[in-house]
Amino acid sequence: MADLDKYGVTRRGLLGVFAATALVAAPTYSNAFGLLKGSGDIRRIRMYSGRTGESIDTIYWIEGEYIPEVMKEINHFMRDWRSDDAMKMDMRTIDIMAASHRLMDVSEPYMLLSGYRSPKTNAMLRSKSGGVARNSLHMKGQAADLRLKSRSVSQMAKAAAACASGGVGKYSRSNFVHMDCGPVRSWGG
Image (tube, rainbow, N blue to C red; front, side):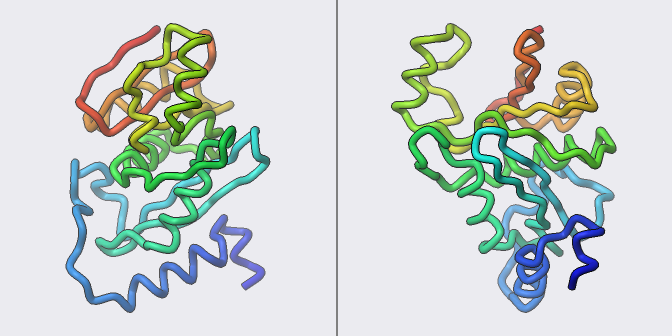
């Protein structure tokens, strides 16, 4: 088991994989968007938070099934760090993030700047910045703001836009990309 760290797989993620293979339930909307065509039978997400010091590197989907225990970990990880409130994240957003990461062919984890935002946090951020939407998809668990050291905002936005599965916002001055599972659109510079 100690060799798992070499491959960037958590013990919980591996246990989730074993649990998922034991399930005989019908697949969820695993083929939604066709995002990860050719990616095999697993989906993996890698992120860290500079705000909480936490990181996550896990397989969250295998052979047509999301792993519920792992999705709970992702929900907790992507919580509003200001209020410690968590919400069930929309799996489509996680898929867009994972597909974009795969398209960029990087091993570096995303830095998560913002996942779920409570209405209170969103209102506070909105009062400080004109770039925060009143009805932000962050409040529905359908968006993430992400950064990579090894890729530019333009490279990240192009990868997310190639998924053609949601909104992509470029925030070059602040060095991050917004990805969501809402209507396909793009903005920013």
